[in-house]
Length: 493
Image (cartoon, rainbow, N blue to C red; front, side):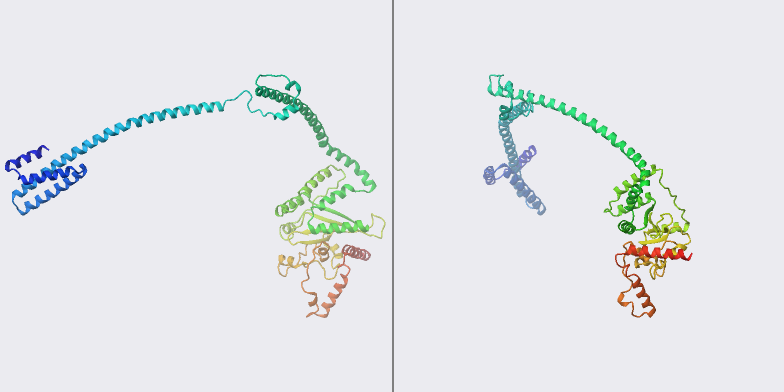
C-alpha cells in the first residue's frame, strides 16, 4: 500500500483532483460501505479490471493524459476500498473465531460430562454382570417341586427347623431331600452294576460255549455218518446238494427241481448229483449280484462255504479232481461256449431190475452255456460221443446240432451250427425241460403251404410224437424214452 500512496502523492503533485469527482467517489464509497465486505471486494476487483482496460485502450488511442489521470485516481480509490474490505474480512474472521471459542467451552464441558457418564455406565454394567455371573453355593440344582417334596419327603427332613427365614428353611430342607434321593440312587446304581457284571460273566460263558459248539456239531455230524450210511439216510449229502442247487442258474435249477420232484412224488428210479467248483459258482453269483442288486445269494453262499468247511473234515467225502481241459475247450469257455461251473448228473436206473448194483443204465450230464443261454446234455463217460446216440433224435428232428432258438443262431452267426466236436449238445427237449420255451420260426398255419408232402408228413409225425411231451409229463416222457433207447442198444450189443 506504500506504493499506492506514493502514486497518489505523485498524482497530487501534478494536479489535485477535481472536487466534483471526489464527492462522487465519497458517495460511492459510502454506498459501498453499506454492502458486505465480500461484495465490496468483488466489485472493487471488477472495477480495477475495467479501469486498467480503459487505460490501455486510451493509451493505444493516444487520448489526453488528464483522462488517464482520472482513471488512475479511480483505481487508487478502488485499492483503498480493497484494503478496507480486506480489513473488514479479517475483523469478521477474528470475531467469528472469538464466538467459536466462546461456544466451544460449553461443548467441551458437555463432552467431558458425557465421557464421565459413559464411564460410570460401563462401571455399573460390569458390576451388574459380575452379580449375575456370581455362582452361589448350590448352582444348577434342579430340585423337585414343592408339592412333590411335601408328599414324598420323610419326616426326619421336613420336621426340624433349620433357619428362622421360612423361604430359606424350605430351601435347605429341599436340598437335604435332594441329597437323600441322590444317595439312594447311588446305592441303586451300585446294585445295577453288580447285576450287570454277573450278566456279562454269564454272557461270556455262553459265548464261549457257542464258539465251541460248531466243533462239537462237526464231531457229532462225523460220528453220525456211519449210522446214516447204514440206515440209508443220506441227510448230510442231501442237504449239501440242496445248498448247491441254490447256486445253479435258473434253467438248471428248473431241471433239478423237476427231476427231484419226479423222484420224490413217484419214487422214480433216478439219482441226482450236482458237481462242479463251488468257489467258481460263488464267484459267478457275486458277479451277477453286482450286476443285479435284486439277487440275494450272498447269505446262501456263506452258508455253502460253512458246509464246504464241514465236508472237508469228513473222511468219507469223495474228492474229484477236475478234468484237464484241452486248449480248444479252453478257448470255447473263454468265448461263446462258456459253461457254468456247476453241472447236474442224472443217474437213470432200470426200474425192472431189483438189484441196485446192476440196474444202472446211463448217466446224463446237464450243463448250461452262459453266452448262448442253452442247456446242453451228454452221456457221462463217453469221450468220443458214441454214447450220445441214445440222445440224438430222441424226438424227431432233434439232432442237437442246430441251435434251438433264434437268439442263439444270431449269436453264432448266420448259417453256423453248433460245434460238432462237443459231446454235450443243446437238444430241444432239454430246453423245454429247463423251462426255456420258444416260438417256432414259422406259424403252424403256414407249415403246410409251399412245402412238399414229405415235409408235411414229417411235421405231422413230429407233432404226434410230442403230443404227450407237450403236456405236463415231460420228465416222465423223457425218462421213458431214454430207458427204451438204452435197453434197445444193450439188446443189440
